[in-house]
Amino acid sequence: MAGAKPGLDMNPREPADAGKLAAVVAALLAVAVFAPLLVVTGTGGTLGAYYAAGPFGLTAVGLLAVVAAVVFLSVGQPHTDETTLSGVGVVVALGVLLTAVAWLFTLDSTVLFSFPAEYAWIENHRWVVLAGALVLAAASGLQARTAL
Image 1 (spheres, rainbow, N blue to C red):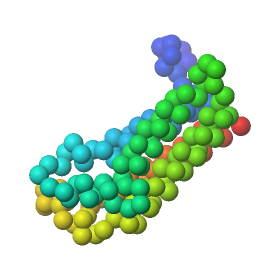
Image 2 (cartoon, helix red, strand yellow; image 1 turned 45 degrees about the vertical axis):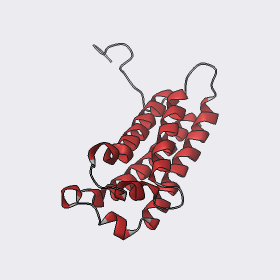
Image 3 (cartoon, rainbow, N blue to C red; image 1 turned 180 degrees about the vertical axis):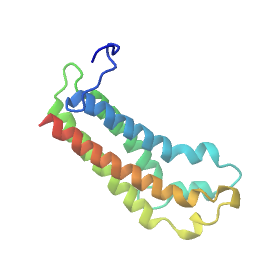
């Protein structure tokens, strides 16, 4: 590209560049998952119950998203196998999706609707998490496709 700065052009057909894009999606999902911990205050144990809901809890979704980001950033690094890391990334991304779905379906509505009115937006947080997990799964599949 004429006039482009070195290191800033990305080719989504290259496994390492596609990995960077998937890592950004994973990082954004982690931020979305953990945002209520920074924003919601004064709710007692409600926020803890919200994050602990389900068989694995919402915290597992966020931590797996961080792992996915690290895996995808590792694609294309020296002494790494792009194909193997791409496969690991797909597995971790599917783990994120399945964990998010399990959390969403087992989230008690009593907990969800017990937040104060100023935090009514948290009722939609679950859908943001699910959408982010779906986008991560799709991005990981596309990234793996570039490595094959």
